[in-house]
Length: 238
Length: 238
DNA sequence: AAGACAAACTTGTATATACAAGACTTTTTT
DNA sequence: AAAAAAGTCTTGTATATACAAGTTTGTCTT
Image 1 (cartoon, rainbow over the protein chains, first blue to last red):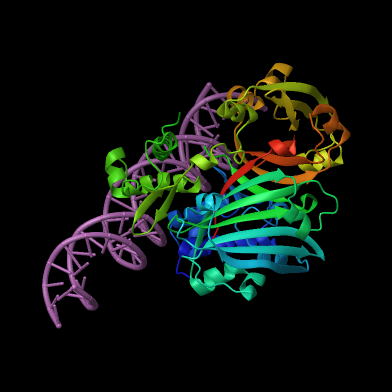
Image 2: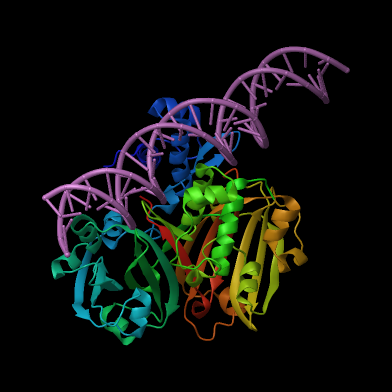
C-alpha cells in the first residue's frame, strides 16, 4: 500500500458503504467532523469525498452535506476495467476459460491502426472462450504489442492476464475507451460459442492505455446477447 | 455563466483540444506556466486539469506533464447524458421526433420501484419514435413524476424535453445510472420501429437523478441493433 | 567515453486560511 | 402570530506554502 491519506480515507468510507455499514439515504459526517475523525485537513477530506462522488457512492449537496447513494443496484460494474476473472468471482458463478489461440502475429492494417503499431512490431494474439455455468458465452480476442509483454503462456491466459501484467510485469493500466455495437455472428462466433439460435452478438471493443498514455491492448469481447449486461454510472460532465 | 474560475479554464482548454488547436500527443504548458497564463494559483489550475483528465482530454504523468489525448475517436458520446436532439445535431443527420403517447398515468409496481414513487403520485408517460434519415430507429419511453414536471405539451416533447426542464423549469440533472441489455422485440417495438427483419433490440435503461440525489426520470430507449453504438471513456477507479 | 552525481524541472500530497454561498435554526421585530 | 433578521451550520472556491517524488538535463568525475 502507498502512504496515501485521501485514498485510504476514500477506501474506508467506500467499504463502509459497500458493506451496508453506512446506509443509502443517510448523510455522512460533515467535512469538518471527518477531518477530526481521520486526523486530516479539510482539503484532504474533500479529495476523498470527490473520489466517492465520482464513483457514485455519494452526492454532495451544498449547504447540507453528503448523501449516501444506493450503490447496490450497480453491483457488478462491467463498466470499469474489471477483468473477467474478478467479475465471475463476484457473481459467484462457475466459470472456465478455454484458450483457443495463442501466438505472435504480424499486424495487418486494421490492427496496426488500433494498436498504433508499426510493420516491424510483433503482436500477441490471444483468443479465449469464456464458459459460465457450462455455456460458452463470450469470445475474447486480445491483442498486445510484444514490446510490453515479452512472454505469455497458456497457463497465464487461462488464469488472469491482468494479474500477470500488474503483479509480475509491473504494468499499470490507466484508462480505456470502450465501444459497444451489435452485429451478425461470424463463422468464428458460431464455431466457438453456444449461440442457441441467436441472430446477433454484442461486441465490446476496448482500447486499453497505460499510465504514460501509450496504447497497450486492443480487445474484442463478443457476447451472446441474452447474457450481456452493461452497467454504467455517469455524472453530467458540465 | 457562473464566475467559476477553474471551470472556465477547463472549458477554454477543452475547446482548444476539441477544435484541434492543441494537438493530441503534445504536452500542455506546465501547471506553473498555466497559472501565469490564466492568472490563477496552481491548485486552481490543478482542478481544471483534473476535470480534463476525468473527461478523457489529457493524461497527467508525474514528473513529465499533461499529455493531450485523442478525443476525435470518441466524438459523439452516447455515453454522457447528452440528449437526442444534441446528438442528432452533432452528427448532422436529418432527424424527426414523433410523439406517440403523452399522458398522465398511475404507476404500477415496476414503475413505482424505478421512480421511487407512491401510489398517490401521478406519472407522465411519454412515448416517442426517433427517425433518422427517414428510418424509425429508436423508441423512447420516458417517465417523469408530476411532482417535478407539472405540465408537458406535445410541442415540448417534439423539441427537447431536457432543454425545457433546464431552461424553463430550472431543473438540474446531476447524474444517471445506465443499463444496457439486448432482448427480443415486443409487439410495440415491431409496430413503431422499422425493424427490417432484425431479431433483437438494444435497450438502454436510464435512471436520472437531480442535484439533491432524488430520482427524477426513468427512460427506456429501444434501438434497432444495427444503428446502436455506445462509446465510453473510463479511468481505472483505483 | 561512460558513469555518477547534482540541479532544475515536472506533478503529487498535505496543510492552512479566507471568504462566498446555500440551508437551517434561533432570535428579534413588526 | 407572522415575518424579518441574525447567527450558525453546511459545502464551494481561491490562494499560499511546504515538501515528496518522478523526469530530464547538464556537469563533473572517473
